Length: 357
Image (cartoon, rainbow, N blue to C red; front, side, top):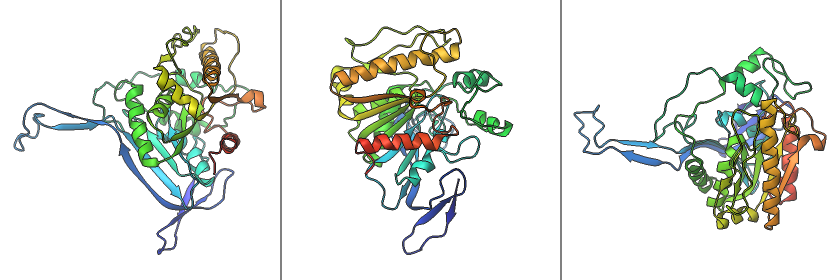
């Protein structure tokens, strides 16, 4: 975490100093704040009457926007980093880890990047939904614990890159956030394209279910200069002619299906560098252990997708961390115990692609 220090009043700056994790370099913040971006407005028929405030006639509802918290260091690098979370999560994904260490928000800020942490539409601080919805109270946390490859609840996989006490596990479960309306990749990508209009040129970093809206965002915004996709869970985009067949799995979530986009939209993804990264405990052959087989098909789809992008002249790369000798990572690469090492790997790729200047 960071402690805010006094700064020179004339410069109107804030200095942050790391007090946890491996990173302790002071960071001077030029500005920080929050905003909403995108969204729509619904209005009830009729005319609003101030004397009848409980009558919806003529009243409005603003919703389906993204919420963003940003921080800009002094002398930031040319590309910001815009973070988009996955299913059941919010911008909290990128903040302090469940066991109290710096998350990617602070790590990349210390590396000199302006950071923009989004809550996607219909989630978290952007919860106002134009569709409405019912938030379930069905207990399902152990399903997600298993699916995120932390272990088979309540146990941990051997060598897993988490070291949680019960307090950390409690923090992890309490960070989970429900949808307030139906998940809609187009609504999310429209809002994220609006975020990019405010952030300016950026590397878009997505996680899990955020992967699909991330591809769509890059199709809609020329401000996306590169994509880092951490364990995309769905939404791999193909043209109709090149889409693979649905991939069957023992997972209760069912077969993994490609998303279909027009050829001219797909080709926009061939104009920017992309890296897709997956962690450990993902089998290469079908298994009846559903929580692992769920990720097998996602890696298989990623491999086909990367090959397709590159066949069209693109620059996509798939990194499987165990093949790099990096073992034990869960679905949450950004908050695992070795998240500093993962951040360095990502920045090395960004340097290679000219995105870290």
